[in-house]
Image (tube, rainbow, N blue to C red; front, top):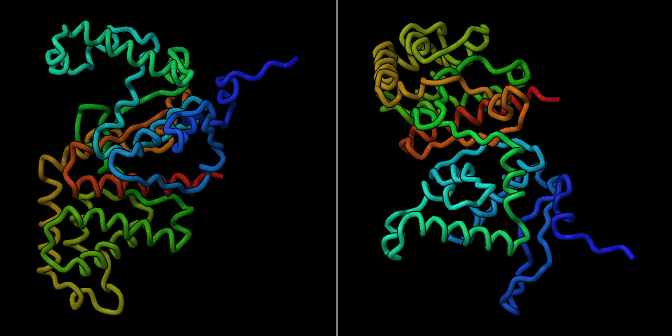
Length: 326
């Protein structure tokens, strides 16, 4: 007589993500039925919505961890700074592992030493995991399956990531597709404009910068922001749309726009966005030895405009990388 498979034998199959157990709202209790998700359903887009505190982040972390166990890499944009907790994996579940991460104020309120409180936390986590048929061996499997790395553009808190080195022409797959090219140009320009105190209208700046970037990329030459400042002041184009350049944007206005961009790139906070290695999607997804990565791009330390700029550049690079795949 064949024995029924254990829960772990059910969910430890490639492509099966274990997300928890079914909750019976009528009985107000958790059942023993597993919630299993077919990873093939994630080949397109998905969205996770819910009220504050309803468990959106926890669900997404569960998906990311299950993907990592199956060797699937991920790039994670972390605007709040809480997804870095993915690195807190303790296979031994020992008090010593928890000790550096406990809140000592909580320990004092419970009249416990930090070591006692860490031991309490370790036991709580161990019991909680066992109630879901998980334990230290599964944590170790997760830890061994992927390389968890925190990237921090504009900061040395993690691995610095340079945003300023990502203005080179996109790959031929994008250059040859006018729709993709114009999307790339528009998102690049919008991300940049969001950081500027514009001396001209946003429409003028968008059209002019877009025309300059499209022309420069068409030559195949590399582009950085100091070069763009020079191009604004000394343009290689004579028309924007149907108008002569001087009619559309007089020299004085162009000079003011160049000064505004120069002031931005000269500011210390913006210069820090140039530190580190350039964005390379393949390197974010896989380590040098080929091990899949969970690359967490933390932007919690940045201002709102800087976040928008970083995300815009990162998504542009991701789209360009996607277009190069078979």
